[in-house]
Length: 444
Image (cartoon, rainbow, N blue to C red; front, top):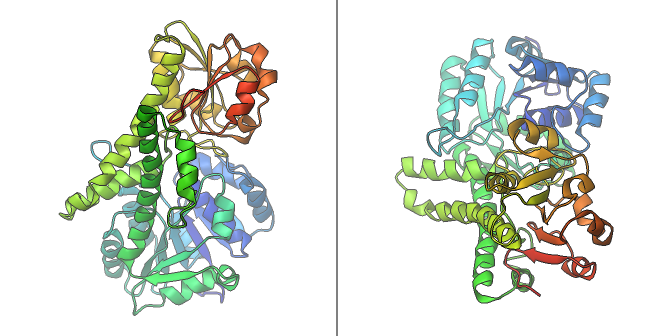
Protein backbone atom coordinates (compact mmCIF):
# COMPACT_ATOMS: atom_id res chain seq x y z
CA UNK A 1 0.00 0.00 0.00
CA UNK A 2 1.16 3.54 -0.64
CA UNK A 3 2.36 5.64 2.31
CA UNK A 4 2.01 9.36 2.81
CA UNK A 5 4.97 11.45 3.99
CA UNK A 6 3.44 11.99 7.43
CA UNK A 7 2.85 9.01 9.70
CA UNK A 8 -0.69 7.71 9.72
CA UNK A 9 -1.62 6.37 13.10
CA UNK A 10 -3.86 3.71 14.55
CA UNK A 11 -4.50 3.21 18.25
CA UNK A 12 -5.44 -0.31 19.33
CA UNK A 13 -7.62 -0.16 22.42
CA UNK A 14 -9.72 2.90 23.24
CA UNK A 15 -9.96 2.71 26.99
CA UNK A 16 -8.55 5.50 29.13
CA UNK A 17 -5.05 5.41 27.67
CA UNK A 18 -6.03 4.62 24.08
CA UNK A 19 -8.85 7.12 23.71
CA UNK A 20 -6.69 9.88 25.16
CA UNK A 21 -3.75 9.00 22.93
CA UNK A 22 -5.91 8.81 19.81
CA UNK A 23 -7.52 12.18 20.44
CA UNK A 24 -4.23 13.88 21.24
CA UNK A 25 -2.46 12.45 18.19
CA UNK A 26 -5.28 13.83 16.06
CA UNK A 27 -4.91 17.15 17.85
CA UNK A 28 -1.28 17.15 16.72
CA UNK A 29 -2.55 16.96 13.15
CA UNK A 30 -2.25 13.26 12.32
CA UNK A 31 -4.87 11.08 10.67
CA UNK A 32 -5.82 8.65 13.45
CA UNK A 33 -7.93 5.50 13.55
CA UNK A 34 -9.01 4.18 16.94
CA UNK A 35 -9.81 0.46 17.18
CA UNK A 36 -11.70 -1.47 19.84
CA UNK A 37 -13.63 -4.73 20.13
CA UNK A 38 -16.21 -2.96 22.34
CA UNK A 39 -18.87 -1.84 19.84
CA UNK A 40 -20.61 0.34 22.40
CA UNK A 41 -17.43 2.24 23.16
CA UNK A 42 -16.79 2.78 19.44
CA UNK A 43 -20.33 4.16 18.98
CA UNK A 44 -19.93 6.59 21.86
CA UNK A 45 -16.54 7.84 20.75
CA UNK A 46 -17.73 8.18 17.15
CA UNK A 47 -20.62 10.28 18.44
CA UNK A 48 -18.23 12.58 20.30
CA UNK A 49 -18.86 11.16 23.76
CA UNK A 50 -15.97 10.16 26.03
CA UNK A 51 -17.03 7.09 28.08
CA UNK A 52 -15.12 8.24 31.17
CA UNK A 53 -14.46 11.52 32.96
CA UNK A 54 -11.32 13.36 31.88
CA UNK A 55 -11.24 17.17 31.86
CA UNK A 56 -10.81 18.68 28.40
CA UNK A 57 -10.84 15.44 26.45
CA UNK A 58 -14.39 15.49 25.10
CA UNK A 59 -13.98 18.94 23.55
CA UNK A 60 -10.85 17.76 21.72
CA UNK A 61 -12.60 14.56 20.63
CA UNK A 62 -15.43 16.49 19.00
CA UNK A 63 -13.06 19.01 17.44
CA UNK A 64 -11.01 16.32 15.72
CA UNK A 65 -14.01 14.23 14.66
CA UNK A 66 -15.41 17.33 12.96
CA UNK A 67 -12.05 18.05 11.34
CA UNK A 68 -12.03 14.55 9.85
CA UNK A 69 -8.70 13.62 11.41
CA UNK A 70 -10.14 11.02 13.79
CA UNK A 71 -12.25 7.93 13.18
CA UNK A 72 -13.13 4.85 15.22
CA UNK A 73 -13.74 1.31 14.06
CA UNK A 74 -14.06 -2.23 15.32
CA UNK A 75 -11.97 -3.58 12.45
CA UNK A 76 -8.23 -4.14 12.74
CA UNK A 77 -8.14 -4.66 8.99
CA UNK A 78 -9.37 -1.09 8.49
CA UNK A 79 -6.70 0.19 10.86
CA UNK A 80 -3.96 -1.70 9.01
CA UNK A 81 -5.23 -0.33 5.69
CA UNK A 82 -5.33 3.24 6.93
CA UNK A 83 -2.19 3.47 9.07
CA UNK A 84 1.49 2.59 9.18
CA UNK A 85 2.23 3.33 12.85
CA UNK A 86 0.12 1.30 15.28
CA UNK A 87 0.03 2.13 19.00
CA UNK A 88 -0.99 -0.73 21.29
CA UNK A 89 -2.86 0.77 24.25
CA UNK A 90 -4.79 -2.18 25.68
CA UNK A 91 -5.12 -3.01 29.36
CA UNK A 92 -2.84 -5.29 31.36
CA UNK A 93 -4.93 -6.06 34.46
CA UNK A 94 -3.79 -8.12 37.40
CA UNK A 95 -4.39 -11.84 37.01
CA UNK A 96 -7.18 -13.00 39.33
CA UNK A 97 -5.10 -15.74 40.96
CA UNK A 98 -1.78 -13.90 41.35
CA UNK A 99 -0.10 -10.53 41.27
CA UNK A 100 1.18 -11.03 37.73
CA UNK A 101 0.02 -8.96 34.77
CA UNK A 102 -2.51 -10.47 32.39
CA UNK A 103 -1.02 -9.99 28.92
CA UNK A 104 -3.80 -11.59 26.89
CA UNK A 105 -4.99 -8.30 25.42
CA UNK A 106 -1.48 -7.25 24.39
CA UNK A 107 -0.83 -10.64 22.81
CA UNK A 108 -4.18 -10.50 21.00
CA UNK A 109 -3.49 -7.00 19.67
CA UNK A 110 -0.14 -7.96 18.14
CA UNK A 111 -1.49 -11.25 16.77
CA UNK A 112 -4.50 -9.42 15.38
CA UNK A 113 -2.35 -6.87 13.58
CA UNK A 114 -0.34 -9.66 11.96
CA UNK A 115 -3.47 -11.51 10.88
CA UNK A 116 -5.10 -8.31 9.62
CA UNK A 117 -2.33 -7.78 7.07
CA UNK A 118 0.36 -5.72 8.77
CA UNK A 119 3.00 -5.02 6.16
CA UNK A 120 6.78 -4.80 5.96
CA UNK A 121 7.83 -1.33 7.08
CA UNK A 122 4.92 -0.93 9.49
CA UNK A 123 5.76 0.06 13.05
CA UNK A 124 4.00 -1.36 16.12
CA UNK A 125 4.47 0.79 19.24
CA UNK A 126 3.60 -0.60 22.65
CA UNK A 127 2.32 1.84 25.25
CA UNK A 128 0.71 -0.66 27.63
CA UNK A 129 2.45 -1.31 30.95
CA UNK A 130 4.05 -4.75 30.67
CA UNK A 131 6.60 -6.89 32.54
CA UNK A 132 10.23 -6.63 31.47
CA UNK A 133 10.95 -8.98 28.60
CA UNK A 134 7.52 -8.73 26.99
CA UNK A 135 8.62 -6.44 24.17
CA UNK A 136 11.59 -8.62 23.24
CA UNK A 137 9.29 -11.62 22.94
CA UNK A 138 6.70 -9.66 20.93
CA UNK A 139 9.39 -8.28 18.63
CA UNK A 140 10.45 -11.84 17.76
CA UNK A 141 6.82 -12.79 17.16
CA UNK A 142 6.36 -9.78 14.89
CA UNK A 143 9.55 -10.49 12.96
CA UNK A 144 8.45 -14.08 12.37
CA UNK A 145 4.95 -13.10 11.28
CA UNK A 146 5.77 -10.01 9.23
CA UNK A 147 9.42 -9.75 8.20
CA UNK A 148 10.33 -6.10 7.90
CA UNK A 149 7.83 -4.84 10.47
CA UNK A 150 9.30 -3.29 13.63
CA UNK A 151 8.31 -3.03 17.26
CA UNK A 152 9.11 -0.19 19.68
CA UNK A 153 8.12 0.43 23.28
CA UNK A 154 6.98 3.92 24.24
CA UNK A 155 5.58 3.82 27.80
CA UNK A 156 2.90 6.24 28.93
CA UNK A 157 3.10 8.40 32.06
CA UNK A 158 -0.45 9.75 32.30
CA UNK A 159 -2.01 11.11 35.46
CA UNK A 160 -5.77 10.73 35.53
CA UNK A 161 -7.29 14.19 35.59
CA UNK A 162 -4.32 15.62 33.67
CA UNK A 163 -4.11 13.13 30.80
CA UNK A 164 -4.51 15.62 27.94
CA UNK A 165 -1.71 17.84 29.19
CA UNK A 166 0.49 14.84 30.00
CA UNK A 167 0.04 13.52 26.45
CA UNK A 168 0.55 16.80 24.60
CA UNK A 169 3.19 18.21 26.98
CA UNK A 170 4.92 15.23 28.60
CA UNK A 171 7.89 15.61 30.94
CA UNK A 172 9.84 13.06 28.87
CA UNK A 173 9.53 10.65 25.97
CA UNK A 174 11.03 7.18 26.23
CA UNK A 175 11.75 5.21 23.05
CA UNK A 176 12.61 1.54 23.49
CA UNK A 177 13.92 0.49 20.08
CA UNK A 178 16.19 -1.98 18.34
CA UNK A 179 19.43 -0.18 17.36
CA UNK A 180 19.48 -1.35 13.76
CA UNK A 181 15.95 -0.32 12.83
CA UNK A 182 14.09 2.81 11.76
CA UNK A 183 11.77 3.00 14.80
CA UNK A 184 13.58 5.87 16.51
CA UNK A 185 13.43 8.05 13.40
CA UNK A 186 9.75 7.32 12.91
CA UNK A 187 8.86 7.97 16.55
CA UNK A 188 10.71 11.27 16.34
CA UNK A 189 8.48 12.14 13.36
CA UNK A 190 5.36 11.32 15.39
CA UNK A 191 6.51 13.41 18.33
CA UNK A 192 8.30 16.12 16.33
CA UNK A 193 6.21 18.96 17.71
CA UNK A 194 6.84 17.98 21.33
CA UNK A 195 10.54 17.42 20.71
CA UNK A 196 10.72 20.81 19.04
CA UNK A 197 9.16 22.32 22.16
CA UNK A 198 12.01 20.91 24.23
CA UNK A 199 10.59 17.67 25.62
CA UNK A 200 13.58 15.44 26.44
CA UNK A 201 13.90 12.09 24.67
CA UNK A 202 15.44 8.99 26.22
CA UNK A 203 16.38 6.37 23.63
CA UNK A 204 17.04 2.94 25.04
CA UNK A 205 16.38 -0.75 24.50
CA UNK A 206 13.04 -2.52 24.78
CA UNK A 207 13.55 -3.89 28.27
CA UNK A 208 14.77 -0.66 29.83
CA UNK A 209 11.81 1.20 28.35
CA UNK A 210 9.46 -1.31 29.97
CA UNK A 211 11.28 -0.94 33.29
CA UNK A 212 11.07 2.86 33.24
CA UNK A 213 7.30 2.73 33.64
CA UNK A 214 7.09 0.11 36.39
CA UNK A 215 10.07 1.59 38.24
CA UNK A 216 8.45 5.04 38.19
CA UNK A 217 5.22 3.66 39.61
CA UNK A 218 7.10 1.64 42.22
CA UNK A 219 8.98 4.75 43.34
CA UNK A 220 5.82 6.86 43.59
CA UNK A 221 4.02 4.13 45.52
CA UNK A 222 6.98 3.84 47.87
CA UNK A 223 7.03 7.57 48.55
CA UNK A 224 3.30 7.63 49.31
CA UNK A 225 3.54 4.61 51.60
CA UNK A 226 6.62 6.06 53.31
CA UNK A 227 4.76 9.12 54.53
CA UNK A 228 1.81 6.97 55.56
CA UNK A 229 4.20 4.78 57.56
CA UNK A 230 5.49 7.97 59.21
CA UNK A 231 1.87 8.85 59.99
CA UNK A 232 1.58 5.55 61.89
CA UNK A 233 4.71 6.44 63.85
CA UNK A 234 3.37 9.94 64.55
CA UNK A 235 0.15 8.48 65.92
CA UNK A 236 2.16 6.31 68.31
CA UNK A 237 4.48 9.12 69.45
CA UNK A 238 2.26 12.19 69.33
CA UNK A 239 4.09 13.72 66.38
CA UNK A 240 2.48 15.62 63.52
CA UNK A 241 3.00 14.07 60.08
CA UNK A 242 2.13 17.29 58.25
CA UNK A 243 4.86 19.21 60.06
CA UNK A 244 7.22 16.27 59.56
CA UNK A 245 6.54 16.25 55.81
CA UNK A 246 7.02 20.00 55.63
CA UNK A 247 10.43 19.71 57.28
CA UNK A 248 11.46 16.84 55.01
CA UNK A 249 10.41 18.79 51.92
CA UNK A 250 13.12 21.39 52.47
CA UNK A 251 15.64 18.71 51.54
CA UNK A 252 15.98 19.02 47.76
CA UNK A 253 16.83 15.31 47.58
CA UNK A 254 13.38 14.46 48.96
CA UNK A 255 11.02 17.23 47.80
CA UNK A 256 7.40 17.85 48.75
CA UNK A 257 5.43 15.96 46.11
CA UNK A 258 3.68 12.76 47.20
CA UNK A 259 4.42 13.43 50.89
CA UNK A 260 0.75 13.91 51.75
CA UNK A 261 -0.34 11.41 54.38
CA UNK A 262 -3.81 9.95 54.03
CA UNK A 263 -5.72 6.85 53.03
CA UNK A 264 -3.24 5.92 50.31
CA UNK A 265 -3.15 5.21 46.62
CA UNK A 266 -5.58 3.25 44.48
CA UNK A 267 -6.73 3.23 40.87
CA UNK A 268 -5.93 0.92 38.01
CA UNK A 269 -2.16 1.48 37.85
CA UNK A 270 -0.07 1.75 41.02
CA UNK A 271 -1.53 -1.19 43.00
CA UNK A 272 -1.51 -3.69 40.15
CA UNK A 273 1.77 -2.44 38.68
CA UNK A 274 3.80 -2.89 41.89
CA UNK A 275 2.32 -6.38 42.32
CA UNK A 276 3.13 -7.29 38.72
CA UNK A 277 6.67 -5.92 39.19
CA UNK A 278 7.12 -8.16 42.23
CA UNK A 279 5.72 -11.16 40.37
CA UNK A 280 8.08 -10.62 37.43
CA UNK A 281 11.06 -10.24 39.75
CA UNK A 282 10.14 -13.57 41.35
CA UNK A 283 10.00 -15.20 37.90
CA UNK A 284 13.45 -13.83 37.11
CA UNK A 285 14.91 -15.10 40.38
CA UNK A 286 15.50 -11.61 41.82
CA UNK A 287 12.40 -11.39 43.98
CA UNK A 288 14.46 -10.35 47.03
CA UNK A 289 15.33 -7.09 45.28
CA UNK A 290 11.68 -6.02 45.41
CA UNK A 291 10.49 -7.51 48.70
CA UNK A 292 10.12 -3.98 50.03
CA UNK A 293 7.21 -3.46 47.62
CA UNK A 294 5.23 -6.00 49.62
CA UNK A 295 5.46 -3.71 52.64
CA UNK A 296 4.68 -0.68 50.47
CA UNK A 297 1.46 -2.46 49.50
CA UNK A 298 0.73 -3.44 53.10
CA UNK A 299 1.25 0.10 54.42
CA UNK A 300 -1.12 1.36 51.74
CA UNK A 301 -3.86 -1.10 52.71
CA UNK A 302 -3.36 -0.35 56.43
CA UNK A 303 -4.02 3.34 55.80
CA UNK A 304 -7.57 2.48 54.79
CA UNK A 305 -8.12 0.36 57.90
CA UNK A 306 -6.73 3.16 60.07
CA UNK A 307 -9.26 5.60 58.60
CA UNK A 308 -12.04 3.15 59.47
CA UNK A 309 -10.65 2.88 63.01
CA UNK A 310 -10.59 6.67 63.31
CA UNK A 311 -14.26 6.80 62.27
CA UNK A 312 -15.14 4.05 64.76
CA UNK A 313 -13.43 6.01 67.52
CA UNK A 314 -15.31 9.17 66.57
CA UNK A 315 -18.54 7.20 66.82
CA UNK A 316 -17.76 5.99 70.32
CA UNK A 317 -16.50 2.58 69.23
CA UNK A 318 -19.46 1.25 67.27
CA UNK A 319 -20.71 2.42 63.86
CA UNK A 320 -23.87 0.28 64.11
CA UNK A 321 -26.99 2.30 63.27
CA UNK A 322 -24.97 5.52 63.13
CA UNK A 323 -25.16 7.98 60.22
CA UNK A 324 -21.96 8.61 58.28
CA UNK A 325 -21.38 11.05 55.43
CA UNK A 326 -18.63 10.27 52.94
CA UNK A 327 -17.32 12.86 50.49
CA UNK A 328 -15.53 11.16 47.62
CA UNK A 329 -15.79 7.89 45.72
CA UNK A 330 -13.18 8.19 42.95
CA UNK A 331 -9.67 7.05 43.84
CA UNK A 332 -8.44 10.57 43.06
CA UNK A 333 -9.97 13.94 42.08
CA UNK A 334 -10.74 14.95 38.48
CA UNK A 335 -11.60 11.35 37.64
CA UNK A 336 -14.56 8.97 37.71
CA UNK A 337 -12.25 5.98 38.16
CA UNK A 338 -13.25 3.83 41.14
CA UNK A 339 -10.86 0.93 40.59
CA UNK A 340 -9.34 -0.05 43.94
CA UNK A 341 -10.72 3.17 45.41
CA UNK A 342 -9.60 3.70 49.03
CA UNK A 343 -12.61 5.96 49.57
CA UNK A 344 -15.09 3.26 48.63
CA UNK A 345 -13.26 0.61 50.63
CA UNK A 346 -13.54 2.78 53.74
CA UNK A 347 -17.22 3.50 53.03
CA UNK A 348 -17.96 -0.20 52.52
CA UNK A 349 -16.15 -1.18 55.72
CA UNK A 350 -18.29 1.24 57.73
CA UNK A 351 -21.44 -0.02 56.02
CA UNK A 352 -20.55 -3.61 56.84
CA UNK A 353 -20.06 -2.53 60.45
CA UNK A 354 -23.69 -1.39 60.50
CA UNK A 355 -23.42 2.32 59.71
CA UNK A 356 -25.87 4.15 57.46
CA UNK A 357 -23.42 5.52 54.86
CA UNK A 358 -24.25 8.20 52.32
CA UNK A 359 -21.67 9.03 49.62
CA UNK A 360 -21.32 12.01 47.29
CA UNK A 361 -18.82 12.40 44.45
CA UNK A 362 -19.11 15.01 41.68
CA UNK A 363 -18.06 12.60 38.88
CA UNK A 364 -17.79 9.00 40.08
CA UNK A 365 -21.20 8.42 41.69
CA UNK A 366 -22.66 6.54 38.71
CA UNK A 367 -19.73 4.13 38.50
CA UNK A 368 -19.69 3.70 42.27
CA UNK A 369 -23.41 3.02 42.46
CA UNK A 370 -23.11 0.26 39.84
CA UNK A 371 -20.32 -1.51 41.74
CA UNK A 372 -21.49 -0.76 45.30
CA UNK A 373 -25.27 -1.01 45.25
CA UNK A 374 -25.50 -1.39 49.02
CA UNK A 375 -24.16 2.10 49.62
CA UNK A 376 -26.45 5.12 49.49
CA UNK A 377 -25.53 7.94 47.13
CA UNK A 378 -26.47 11.58 47.44
CA UNK A 379 -26.69 14.27 44.77
CA UNK A 380 -24.86 16.92 46.78
CA UNK A 381 -22.52 17.49 49.69
CA UNK A 382 -25.43 18.59 51.87
CA UNK A 383 -27.38 15.49 50.92
CA UNK A 384 -24.49 13.23 51.89
CA UNK A 385 -23.83 14.82 55.27
CA UNK A 386 -27.43 15.45 56.34
CA UNK A 387 -27.80 14.13 59.89
CA UNK A 388 -24.29 12.67 59.90
CA UNK A 389 -22.53 11.98 63.17
CA UNK A 390 -19.19 11.96 61.40
CA UNK A 391 -18.14 13.24 57.96
CA UNK A 392 -15.21 11.70 56.11
CA UNK A 393 -13.46 13.55 53.27
CA UNK A 394 -11.90 10.74 51.25
CA UNK A 395 -11.22 12.22 47.78
CA UNK A 396 -9.58 15.64 47.56
CA UNK A 397 -11.88 17.27 45.02
CA UNK A 398 -11.51 21.06 44.85
CA UNK A 399 -15.19 21.32 45.76
CA UNK A 400 -14.46 19.63 49.08
CA UNK A 401 -11.33 21.66 49.78
CA UNK A 402 -13.35 24.85 49.42
CA UNK A 403 -16.28 23.83 51.60
CA UNK A 404 -17.41 26.40 54.17
CA UNK A 405 -17.54 24.46 57.45
CA UNK A 406 -19.75 27.08 59.06
CA UNK A 407 -22.37 26.67 56.31
CA UNK A 408 -22.16 22.88 56.56
CA UNK A 409 -22.40 22.80 60.38
CA UNK A 410 -26.23 23.07 60.71
CA UNK A 411 -26.78 20.07 58.42
CA UNK A 412 -24.93 17.49 60.55
CA UNK A 413 -25.95 15.84 63.81
CA UNK A 414 -22.43 16.06 65.25
CA UNK A 415 -19.68 18.31 63.80
CA UNK A 416 -16.87 15.77 63.47
CA UNK A 417 -14.79 15.64 60.28
CA UNK A 418 -12.13 13.09 59.37
CA UNK A 419 -9.80 14.45 56.72
CA UNK A 420 -8.62 11.35 54.91
CA UNK A 421 -6.55 13.28 52.38
CA UNK A 422 -5.08 16.21 54.28
CA UNK A 423 -7.21 18.39 52.05
CA UNK A 424 -8.79 20.69 54.64
CA UNK A 425 -7.57 23.61 56.74
CA UNK A 426 -7.80 22.26 60.30
CA UNK A 427 -7.92 25.67 61.96
CA UNK A 428 -10.76 26.84 59.71
CA UNK A 429 -12.86 23.80 60.59
CA UNK A 430 -12.08 23.99 64.30
CA UNK A 431 -12.94 27.70 64.37
CA UNK A 432 -16.33 26.81 62.84
CA UNK A 433 -16.99 24.42 65.72
CA UNK A 434 -15.90 21.12 64.22
CA UNK A 435 -13.76 18.40 65.74
CA UNK A 436 -11.03 17.80 63.17
CA UNK A 437 -9.21 14.47 62.92
CA UNK A 438 -6.69 13.17 60.39
CA UNK A 439 -4.25 10.29 60.11
CA UNK A 440 -0.91 11.06 61.71
CA UNK A 441 -2.05 14.30 63.36
CA UNK A 442 -2.41 14.90 67.11
CA UNK A 443 -5.65 16.02 68.70
CA UNK A 444 -5.57 19.74 69.40
